[in-house]
Image (cartoon, rainbow, N blue to C red; front, top):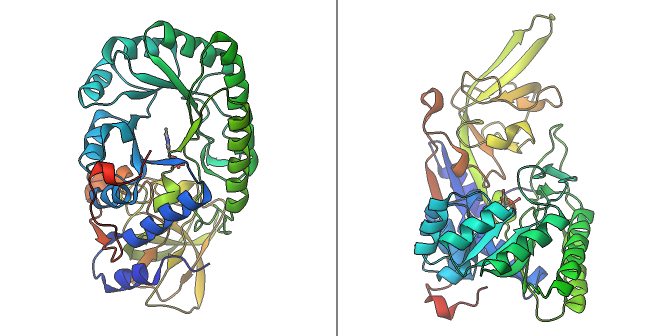
Length: 404
Ligand SMILES: Cc1ncc(COP(=O)(O)O)c(C=O)c1O
């Protein structure tokens, strides 16, 4: 696969300084693909993946709502002009004050996974809708999200019963199958589990009207830690989700609507970093082995937070041909975690690469701007550029855009 659109590559080529570039037309097209694959499903962008104003505006204009993780993200979401009803508080972890702030901002839809959190929502956001996040095992994902959030099916029944008894609306169930989920089976299992809990709730008179399938949809352009293309079965994943939704609709005793909260899927392949080589070196280690190291101008602390779990496709535009050396790729800071997982895979780097030569880091649009430190080791966050979308829908009032 060739990563990055021609427009994105042209912008990287035109940039004389380091920066991260987002292709807004690409993000809009990705959104349209998703809506086409999952007809009737509302999309709420997981803002944490790319809280960049222009990206949020682009998605809002296209019809997306937002999954926000804090009052600050809620404010950012509302600044795009979407109605509060198109934003939910998707973080199960929130203080009393966070809940009250969200409520004051107009949010009436909260994720939860514990009776303690339900009691707090009832106290600080009375009458709101709450959806309970079910735990998943995270298997098949690059980043399983299995421990910190989500409860068992039994607990979900208790949590939603408490919600009803506390005057809240037990509105739904949610899952997150793990980020960059590589198996369709994870969604099948999650949808089955949701169906089981909905069936347990029915005799209690609790009939949620919404299922939130969370994030986890994979990006297409990554390499694994060994440098092999990650080839997610995206078509199969969509087919399994469609089948599972149909099954749940058939079983539901009433109307059931569906949401997804993609982050990575919408932005990862639509962003790329123009970095440069700090230096290509060779050093002998204590075992007597000589290894090449390519130190880039950006790394774990300024754009490539996920570099320990995957490899990005690198382009060396001023050295399209070898000879190559096999090198460990690392960032510029004095932190040994600021490197690819080099026990697994080395990268072919042009031997003639000199300090200052541009290096493009493709498919780096997700979790880049949000995971940048404010200057660890004195390396500033990367500036960003958004390439305008010539076919962007005109800014519309909230009512004029179909959104969930
Ligand atoms: C609640 C929630 N929804 C959605 C997402 C987005 O996940 P992804 O980027 O894998 O689509 C996350 C990511 O951590 C999340 O915590």
